[in-house]
Length: 357
Ligand SMILES: Nc1ncnc2c1ncn2[C@@H]1O[C@H](COP(=O)(O)OP(=O)(O)OP(=O)(O)O)[C@@H](O)[C@H]1O
Ligand SMILES: [Mg+2]
Image (tube, rainbow, N blue to C red):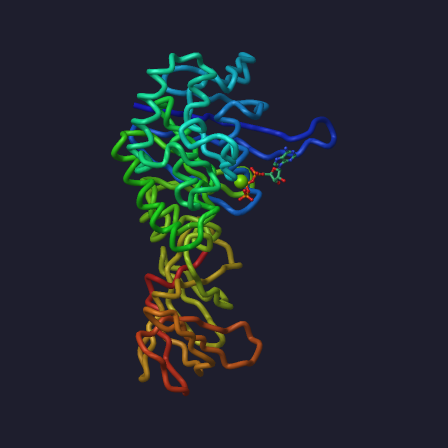
């Protein structure tokens, strides 16, 4: 069953000649129990889409259904106000009320809804316990760590028991270490409570870790959607391939195509690659993920010989840069398990991993 569906949504900021098209025909679905990550570069429209779903922005056309209920329909001029959409919201800057305790921060929305106070206490304590905050109800926000504050913001969104929660970069205020812990916690919580969640992030690693499915937004349109594995391993477009991982771009000329097999000229070397996407023209872009480049001291097939420039220590491995310094655009980065001696290496680009767009 679908908890949320967005169909061909258009949204402009401003009107008339100064109108700025922000969403340009976005369609998406969220199934019950699913976590979907909304991923994309800064300014691509992620927050705008979330706010439109929440009822905080007015789209120009399209429709939005929450469960069976239509909450926006451009053609019928139907627009249900935010407070009647019963969604849980956690925003980019999850401002808590500084002069209210944790308990009162979470209870506030229920008080507005005129729930009686013993029901409120039971509901708030239940949610705080679920989030591991049961002992912190009397504290004020400034007496909490960043991670705890972030959980209070999530508690505030969950207290209504919403079937769908919308999260806009909920982990962005946390430092890197805490952020990794928080994303595991958040994923586990969403699954345990049987919620459906649409979560905005611009961090592709976070999107892959937390979601069942990723929607990649590019300049107001969905570029590609799919499981984290399919987005990472079989991107359909150059944009998706570049956004999802760390890549080497190579200066390549097309020699010949034979189905998905492509012969390329890379700096005078003839190489074999694999076509991805729909480009059948002469202008091509060749790329390979850093982790797919194999470093060899001896000659191997489908390889380019380059001198080592430098190796950087990453803790669990080394990232090495190969460059012959001729400004021909031919540079390769690759991972090694140990620090390499200076000298020349054969960098093998396996045919199926050398992507041509
Ligand atoms: N209230 C507004 N009025 C006019 N333009 C706006 C408004 N809010 C956002 N925009 C513009 O809409 C575009 C999309 O903004 P949005 O906030 O949806 O991006 P985002 O994908 O969430 O980016 P980020 O990752 O930086 O949060 C941007 O170009 C932004 O400048
Ligand atoms: Mg945003």
